[in-house]
Length: 296
Length: 170
Image (cartoon, rainbow over all chains, first blue to last red; front, top):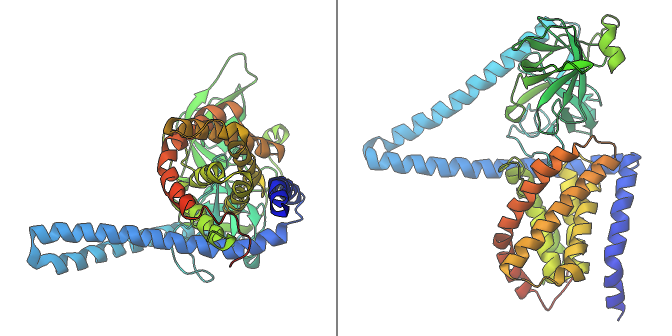
């Protein structure tokens, strides 16, 4: 009898508890608890990703070995070794290229401060072991990635995150002790003041629900060109000026509209990111170009 | 014996599979959602109380893997679990077609609830795009996947039927 009563109240209790969680999250009352839970969750995700990718590599290797055995049995071991070596070297080559981009960017901006980090689980890698991507955003309506640097590494909310040299990918939205969540430019919540390199038109780059990028609030009198490079304007001081965002692929101009818009292709594939740099300090732009500021 | 010591690691494993393997997958805009399917089918098989516990744990795990508001997915999952385990869901019976239809409706409702919580917590929501291009294909995809998830869960349900929900580890 008592068990029956308890069971009938349980769903209601859990419902109230989840609403309470939502409210406490919004009031930031649970920030420390969430941060502590991330300490447990992040290594777990990283471990499973490593396991999954390890298993994937194993299957691939087995397949390759079978093919080679059928074709040239006597050369199997040699081919295996060379294949593995080749894969490793390609990884090293990609990593060197990535680091070269980032190094050049750091050299080009001597007054800024940077912090290297990996996209959740792609290690950088003093705190966490070098690995692969450990998890993706589970909410299909948000676009974020996690990186393995947090408040302990001086990462704070709002800091810009770049990759492949000076390509802006987003801003830090949440910072836990050793992990941070980066809100990508194509998240619907993201908005960044930008200008076009050739036409010098200014606007506001916003993420779309379908994951694309669009620049809005571009004055009608500006002449836009497909292929124009989109850069951050630095207006507002939240971001450095001149970070690459993408390239204009389509101009949307309607005679009756107050502004024109531009569809932008991101400069990098956000799903393929490995290493990123968090810009922990920079010299903000204090003046210039009041138009986009006003629109924002 | 099916206790929380079994449910917790089981749902953690399912959530990790979801977060690591399935989250990047999209088929015509639809996202396969293993946690949602597991919770829905278990709620249907075992009733409201046990379904609510599974929904709460599964939702909380998804929230922790997500950058969204903590409690958002939990709340959405709880409500649909209560919905399918209640009189409305049970009234449908359980043939293969009915299971698919039930998951179709519940999955779409889950996405609507998810969007409502996002909207409520200040995230911009493009309703037209989200419902037509994400929620609807996800509902269809998960409804088609439901029979494959139902089979192992039905087996687990049969094996643990006499135990019911046990909150201690014994």
